[in-house]
Image 1 (spheres, rainbow, N blue to C red):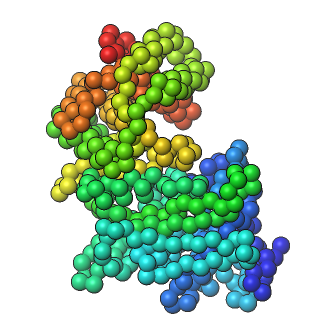
Image 2: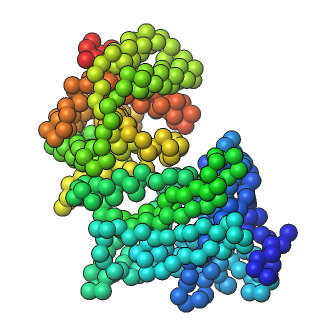
Image 3: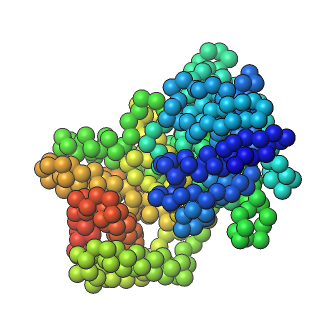
Length: 477
């Protein structure tokens, strides 16, 4: 089938190429399904040399259980791009230009330069849609705190990401100074502001250096999928650029090394607790807080009970803990709860970097990417982040035990206690909300139980052991 495109034809069509390619990408959510794609919108960036076509398609996929909108940047070349075979989407025949090689543009250096120019406001985007109905605007928004004018001299894609694609940019400014940047291209789109952009920008504007320096972002709008709501268009963030810290180590690797060698984590965990509290305190001041109503408490606890029931249906060993789990959640329901505020939302050791100069740097405030965006942009309990980090310390120790190391229970207890001590030095003491904190810990462990059952059954004992320990605590308050 040929696609008529601005007075000429191409075959196969772009959607046909994507249908054959998207299902195998890490960021494609409906694994095992055949994409069923519909074009919602498209926009272009320019190549100053005029040699490479750069187009981003916004497509709706109905191939999975739920419709999902994806962002797919493509680059079109008249000859193969050296070293980019793994990024080849396919080839097509253009009625005027002849053979064209089509690439995942995030791997194309021309796209990387053009995208940063858009973010910095030195280039613009234009619609490549063929009807007025598909004619949204796509604009770059430079961060108020970023003043450098830089030129891209190299780019590469960060490996291992699941839900987005991040491009590492090597840049130089007018004075020849080097700056490493990272641009996250959001793959799954939903209307609304992305919390990764909003929260880190708010933190930097408030003077907090516990997150990378923000460079800017790209916003766009696209026709809302049929049945998505009454609004004819959706809008939100498409990309986010910030400082990249090369050669640093994430806290997960630091913790594994310490646990393996039974080296005390007291100092590092305490300072991480202080850094976390500093971020929470700044977010509360910058974006406000909301009292936690009794109705909200009931809703949260009901969700935890539901997740326990779902986990027990998958792992029969949990059924014998029904009574202790109910007792723990009952205690949380009756306890005093702190105010709601914006939080990280997916906090663990892998989301933190250790900088020799700046200490702990927190990353990826997007929240759990598989949760709807609307749920990730509302105030939540800061205790959720604290519980996530406590569980992460337990996982670090548990992974060492799983690999044949000795018991790490003492190391885990010290790390967790030091983290809580450090947090309490800056903000409210999490131990003052012990019943609520324990409920969030066990809720996280229930999620882990289901995940390990489905993906790594031999790791199941790590979260199961945590649930047993939490439900055997004599005093949850």
